[in-house]
Amino acid sequence: MSDSPAVDAARALVADLAAQGVRDVVLAPGSRSAPLAYALAEADAAGLLRLHVRIDERSAAFLALGLSRGSGLRPADGGTPTDAAPVAVVTTSGTAVVHLHPAVLEASHAGLPLVLLTADRPHELRGTGASQTTDQVGVFGAAVRHAADVPAPDGRPGEIDDLLATARRALAAARGLRDRHPGPVHLNLAYRDPLHPSHPAGAPMTPRPGVTVVPPSPGPGADPDLPGDPARTVVVAGDGAGPAARRLAEAQGWPLLAEPTSGACGGPQAVAAYRSVLGADDLAADVAHVVVLGRPTLSRPVQRLLARPDVTVTVVAPGGGPWPDAARNAARVVERLADRWFATPAHDGGAPDGGAADGGAFAARWRAASAAAATQVDAVTRDVSALATAPYAALAVARSVVAATGPDDVLVVGASNPVRDVDLVTGLDAAVDDPPPRIVANRGLAGIDGTVATATGVALAAARRGLRTRALVGDLTFLHDVGGLLRGPGEAPVELQVVVVNDDGGSIFATLEHGSLARSGPAAAATFERVFGTPHGADLGALCAGYGVEHRRAEDVDTLRAALADPPPGVSVIEVRVPRADRLVESRALADRIVRAVQRR
Image (cartoon, rainbow, N blue to C red; front, top):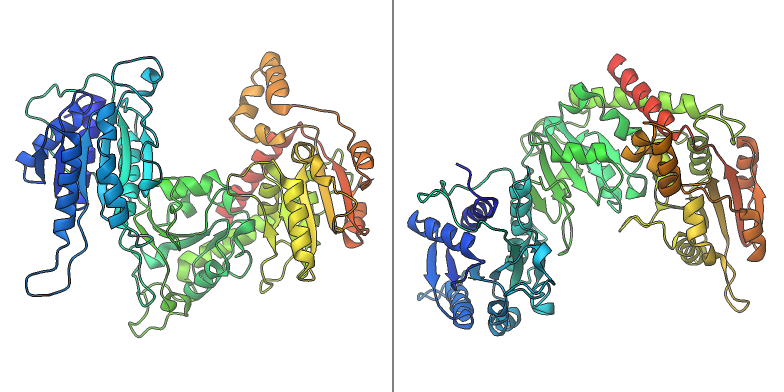
């Protein structure tokens, strides 16, 4: 039985907090917090939790502090004390919030898990002079372990799941499940009228399934089980996953979807062109469990896989920081996997069933799909010659650069299309047992800014280890940070070769929704070209000359390969001009070719 979005969201939040082990909540009365007040009264009546009401917020917060501290007292028989239980305290907006601060500071220093639920005006009323409206975001500063500003619910599909995923992250931080450093957390909850239920009886207070449950992080000797079906599991290796992802996939016979900056590319389980392979519905539909290592950032198809309600997702995330779960669908978060998962399973009952190293029929289908996909990518990049006009020229450039990246090389890749092109071609020219290439990129926020300077820093550090550095960037990325070429006469020399794929603009946007809209007519095309395509006509050679950097053009693949094989000393730039107009058509055509080939296998 649906009610107003504010009341529905408050009921779901309260029910979920109770399901996650919150047994006591202290409420100070107020108007903006009314949705929570109604929900708490219903939960108290249903026996889901105990509600305590106090008229003063400062006293309410210290009452919650005492409830939490008391829950962890040593038993009378001298036994081991239990961990302090999380206790929530609820206030309305305005000055009510800051009265919690003394207790928050005490909880922070004492390591007690308080959950601060502060109601707020919706974002459109902030800064307008609306009554009882001030800036509550970040009001507790460094005293809280986690804080989130939650927008007012408006009834959109999926918003309850998003709210509960946010709340569970906060509760995990309050308990110290990730970093063993419990303390207070703050959820600032905006609500929009109406704030009261339209049905006096209220809706059933039942938790919603399918949102992340975060168990305590396992200690050094822990041996966590995985919740999903091992016979239909794939491994997703995102940025920074490291070699553990490849070792896990090979030990268990699981398909490996590895981003180029994962440090896990290659091997017999690696799936070529996995982003397109996931478009083969019959193959992707058979996936029941995904183990995620690192931070996946490149692929919408991967995120759609991780968001599927019928797929169980396990996230392996060492340390105490936030775990990657953009789809808000992880079933379990663990700090590490036990050694047994990295050993080839035996059939003695000591290893998970269904994860035999040969992978069974499921893994065999994925290996066949990978081979079919690799054949298609090879076909469109193998015989490319005149790069300025050739189809798939940018992919051919990426393939040449990756092929030139040997065991003593480091490749720095720019954001947007270059890193995605590298993702498609990595492994095409490598032996199955080759170690993964050293590929790095700024994937923390995936911006194009500072890439030339980043590559310069990598080159300086890599040279100390006897490694050579190369960068592959787009023209906008290069122009955005062309100042990174500047080096004073007293600075250490840099050995860096920069390959610039110049399509005179932002071709990444052509592969997104904007590219499709641009094809709807001349006016839309003109708008796209001006605000997304952003042609510049810059003379990269003249820019390089101004910085005293050697520049050369590579008109064809043979010239490019020769330049890659014999870089001049110092910093140099290879410019490769490629077409931009057909990027969307080419991307879709290749994806379709791969899907058809996979389905024919």
